[in-house]
Length: 195
Image (cartoon, rainbow, N blue to C red):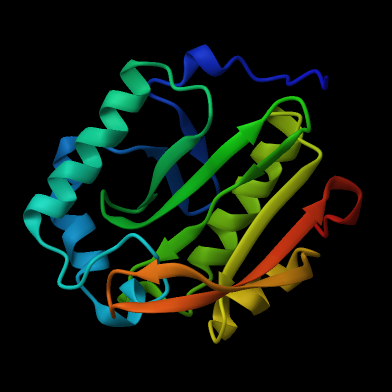
């Protein structure tokens, strides 16, 4: 078994920082920003479990789920919001999920509100997710993926050294458009990481 370095019991009020971003636990006050970000078909169509339209009840339920997980010290992952440092505005979300301590692996994803695309925020947050996973959690491999056709996600992952490992045909039912989607499976070994 790998020696996972991070004490998962200390998840409440976790906060990571980059030059322009604060990556932290979701809070009830984030509801409006969450709705603004996900009530957009151009974002939700690339996420399996996000309906469109994305309404207040959906946002409240998601944030409550995250708060409950933190309170119960769920040791299988993290759900973070991505907030601008310049002013308190949540512009996206990020997860590190399905952490397997035995194998030293995890999954997870990221999304950014459309009006904040092409500003480098996704790359900055994703870089911190990778750094945190390898350097602080002590993981050895990250397993991700993207819906076939999501070229932005593909390019982002490739910048950090991710390799395509396969395709799972019609793996996920996308709530936003009601279609089954193919998932392109990607992986990044710690030694392949492009910092």
